[in-house]
Amino acid sequence: MNKVKLIVFFLCCSHLSAFSLDEKIGQLFIAPVYPKDENALKEKQPVPNRDYIDRLITKYHIGGVLLKFYWDLEEEKEAIEHFQSLSKTPLFICQDVERGLSQRVRDIGPAAKTDGYEIGRQCRLAGVNFALAPVADVDSNPENPVIGKRSFGSDADEVATVVSRVVCEIQSCGVIATAKHFPGHGDTSEDSHAVLPILKHNRERINSVELKPFKAAIEGGVMAVMTGHLAVLAFDDKPASLSRHVVEELLRKDLGFEGLVITDDLLMGAVRSDEAALEAFKAGNDLILSAPDIPRAIEQIKAVILSGEIAEEELDERVERIQKAKRFCNKKTGLQLPRF
Image 1 (cartoon, helix red, strand yellow):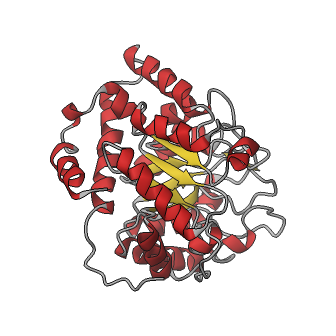
Image 2 (tube, helix red, strand yellow):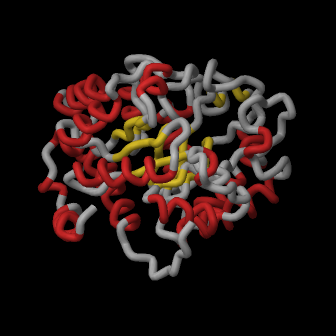
């Protein structure tokens, strides 16, 4: 993003009057982008994928992109620069980086998942400003097919300590850290990429185990929390990512979280549907990750705002949080970051 565009952004983004309703709604969406069209087709996304993303940026004013599958470093950096050049406001550039860029980039050495500084450094150098890490789930179920070694361990207090530190290290590099998958995906035995896991523990148990690392992350200043695709029956029989009880009552009110709430990927089998993005918006999420059909979802959200079902003032609160986080991403850190 060039210097002139950044200056205009910093002058205007604090005044939501500079945004049309369409632009404000567009800011809620993070679109999946792929290195190859065959990857996009695998997830039933439009091709040519890069042309589709260009249109989402220029016509629908999306808030960011998620770099999926496996990239070459220079290709990734070029794609990021291209997308940023098209956008009226700086984009969130999101990527799964629990082990650093090596999780999604071929020619980068892995970082230790406990080394938040190295994860943040790699992201900053590549142009990724929104790290989908660290995992704050407690690995309490050996039959869990999706968390396991991604967690920092089976002891909630130890996980909380490491999560808090890794969050601070990532964000010291000017990169947003994301604690995931709220309110805790560790003690499930099904893969949310395919089906909806169900957590049956009571609130006392969830408060003493699952929520501990998230509380520590919030106290440590984490800027984003990702809601998980699992039903936590103590709060709701809906997926947590689509539950207003989980987002607004548990995360916002009970835990006092004031940062960004982002859904897990809506292309996952646990929630994928034509209504998922709308339900995620109604639940209170600020950012909607990988909606299956973004133009359709934008029209759905616009309709509920124009009808008064959701007040535009509530949308404004979310967009203000988004713009505040974007200002953080675009500040100079003062760090001397060695090259790869």
